[in-house]
Length: 396
Image (cartoon, helix red, strand yellow):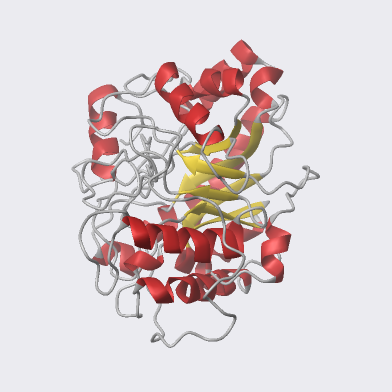
């Protein structure tokens, strides 16, 4: 992900929305023990994000993976009310993998619009229909046992259903996107999805780029290369970086080593150098939520406003604009369900909500051999279990 002119373009929202380079984190619908988050939990996250010491900007936005409160049928997620009380901007998400219906997501969203009105809708900066669905059905995703995804035809249908549902509401003009791994966007079979979007969301983790020289000193080059590949594939559509980060602890991944020192280096060389205040960015992550992922990405402990490392940006960087010495390769990965979180559902994310392999066919938190997402957020497995227990997602 090599930002160049696209980085600037990424700050411009489609559909006449005001251009703004948002700063935020990902947030799942559950805690690390898979218990549901409630208003107080979200509020604590949002307040910490906005109060981080020496932050290179105000992190007053959040990316969610679902509109549904964990373990409910279609109650609005309590993050909405917490966002209203803390003036936090919302990048919303609709879970699209392993299901043939988004009716419950739309029901929860409609209930929130009715209950909170413009106090809620005015905070919404974007809507992502799906998260890493295209990755899961790719050759790499299948190899990594990432679970059931969704193809372009399904995503296009869900986009139409969402537009119809919000046509007469305060969300009618909110720009629509889809979040996926960088190599999903470079796959020409997915161009029909790109054409239907106002912006493109990219999850990119150089940490998981096996076989490409993924040591920390090369992380900026790997990020740049992937970003450039996406930029060359999306026809000028704004690019939002919806997940990226480096773990502070956990297992070594090929040449990549998790540590607080390396997380700081990545923050500088990717966040400060290329993203912050240039591209809408949702870092992975403020708080760890995926118990299935041994790599931990949280930049703060127990939601302290004093981070694990200095968040201020340097005046000089080590990553240049030259080519990387790493070998070429395509992989992307994710392994997550970005979900996110039930995270509601995303695999990478609490992160993204990563999901684990499950009988429900959601995704599995298997590490990607080449790539991009994988370990953030509530795992797919976690999401899957939530869905099975509470019917949060219409997976069957």
